[in-house]
Image (cartoon, rainbow, N blue to C red; front, top):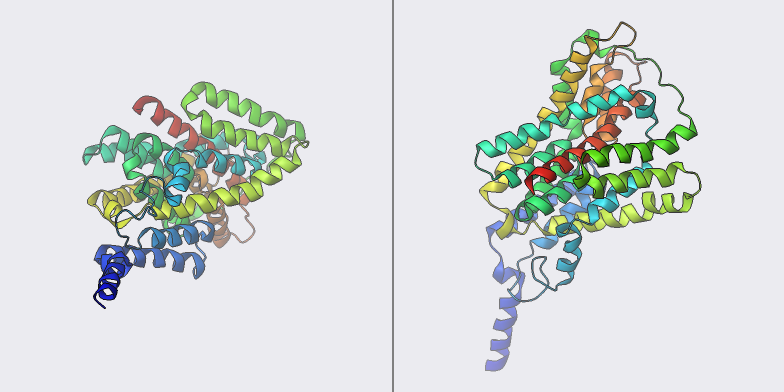
Length: 380
């Protein structure tokens, strides 16, 4: 009888009930909140559902030494987490994005590339703010990239510059990607006039198949020579686009844009969520990162919209750009472009901005990878 009681006591010590505290309960509640937003509100469910469930998995209270936690060497979760830790999931995601992306809007109107570049001001603005409140230059660079609204880029850069902050940075970046339809519209309305919101842009010209084939090659050469440190992301992005546009590698393009990116998205979401283990995540730095991430994202949105307003001063009537597409300079494809279109239709039901907004939107993907390469170049 004594042995049975002793065994039951030992069993109890191994349960989550015995090892629980309020921090784990709080993180599980946050995970449930992510699931609610992803399932009920349908805010980026492909991201928030895996991350939300990963947060729950990562915060089941464990008895030390069970070799199942994401931070315990040799555990299954730890092995899967190496894709995040070592930064090889993000390039695979970028290849899939390239294979799904049509750069026609950008090729037909190259000046839209400048909007994507202007939106990256949020990254460097947050970098400066992070330095002011005491983060190291490397940590500040990793935090700043949240402003690009690009989760894979944030993971890639933080894995190199600030691996200890990766969980907070990744969750912050993906959260703000999901909140694009909430955060951006008020900023767009605040910075534009009614007259500007109804500007009609010329239809984009038809882009030839040859131009589409050449673009990823020229695009990669130009960007890679400027920021060689961005090659893992830029190379895979443009390669993915090349196998799509070449017309002779359809199976590869379908795999990259379908099964491969889906598998990697599941793995990256689950493992990023698991990395938010309460004892690692619930720190003052995490709160500061979320605050700086929000500022970074807002500055990026403002930068894109204000740049269009400034650029219009030098354009003739009939060639002006609707500043409502300025928000699309961030890398949240295609959500921020959809926001541009929805806001435009509110003020002119026949003014469809989606195709125009896709130009700066895909430019933002390139811009965030270039910005990551710049930060990696002088901070690593």
